[in-house]
View (tube, rainbow, N blue to C red):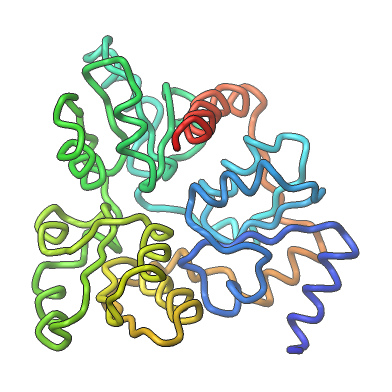
Length: 304
């Protein structure tokens, strides 16, 4: 076994550490993790562990969510500068102002938001369950923050609601253009096109399916297709290829998130040895943000 993996395995046992990694993490981080998944997967896993310490290999809003759902556990983010630019596109002050203009609207916060924004929401969602969450709400109007593309996609699936979009976006997905998909489709005409719903509407229109990252993983395993064009952050292709060795996956080469790549093996080991940097949040924010997150989790348990 690799020396680094040997050290990580030893630290896990010694300190009762669970290592979670998002699908966009570098290959060596995915290999070192106990569990690799998308935002919904990791949120659920964080609530079911008996480990004393959670080391979250992802970006800051994910580690915050793990801490909110596990207030009595130690949550570590190996690189605290690994933030999400989209999450930073909406602030509590801005959201309060929008809420005042639409007092009858429910506030639905994508999990890709900071804790202080979640604290103002009625319910959270991920890209995997956003449509189900929107349908579950009794209100006819929904303020959706912060991703305009995911919100627009949800609107197409839930036409009976009026979704008020916040003008945020994910740089990585926004930069994927129709010509990028068309170029790969020309090169690989038999490939299925799978894209993330954070992509532009005109990119989603070219796809065979719009899925969360774990939706792509599930579909790739069961689809009779053997070739896939993957319209999301290229890190997902490592997991897809690892779990489907007989199939071929073609990434969008420019779909790269620098923040998702900030955590290295060296940073992971150091954080496990020192139990730093630890995620800390104010108690009031923890309490208020847990409510919409828990509503999302409870809805998931009710959804077949």
